[in-house]
Amino acid sequence: MVSLPHPLPGAVGLSHLSAYDWEAADGVCGGSPHLHLVCTEAYVVTGGRGAVQTLSPDGYREVPLEAGSVAWFTPGTVHRMVQGGDLRITVLMQNSGLPEAGDAVFTFPPDVLADPERYAATAKLPAKEGPEAEAAARKRRDLAVEGYLPLREALEAGDNGPYLEFQQAAARLVRDKVPTWRELWRAGALATAERTGAQLDALEAGSPDHLAGSGSYDSRPSRIGGYGMCGRRDEYELPGTTLPYHGA
Image (tube, rainbow, N blue to C red; front, top):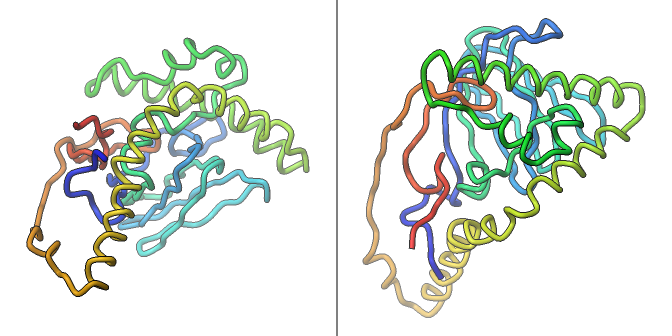
């Protein structure tokens, strides 16, 4: 089996975010609401304050965030990072490179979600840096908020229909990507878990031979302040962190 070379613990993805301070239509500053289809995401707050707004079968929730807070959300939970003042977080993402391979769907209005080509064009940024990238990221955020607010209002009114319809639309958008995701999962998270099983078998048999391959590794962000879904993102150009794994 192909495996991720020297993955982070548990083959998690990693990035750092500073929440957007752009004001949205509802007067709130923050990021682009979205969900993940197969990945649990965690926020580890390293500075500032703010909140994360979530939509789930339990309804709408707003969780305060401050330094030391940890919040996480399972697949299908719509989440929106809200800026309260210099909010900075470290993001831990399940299944290494899957989110970078498309396991995230914005809460765009239904007419955009219904057209895969239009959705892809709207979600993609035309550049990595500069005024054009910033304008596109802000426009993308605003459109995601436009679709998010009716979902939230419906849930608060006791109607989960629009939220469930959004989940269905998101699943349709990503269906064709599943074979690629499966290979990334096999190479990262699954291979890591199976490697641990093999190590346990070896230790149980009295053999520590796998320890001969031990080593230490380090890295620094390869890009500072990129435009992510929720804010300006510091990325690591390593397979399985903020890049999908395409190795052989």
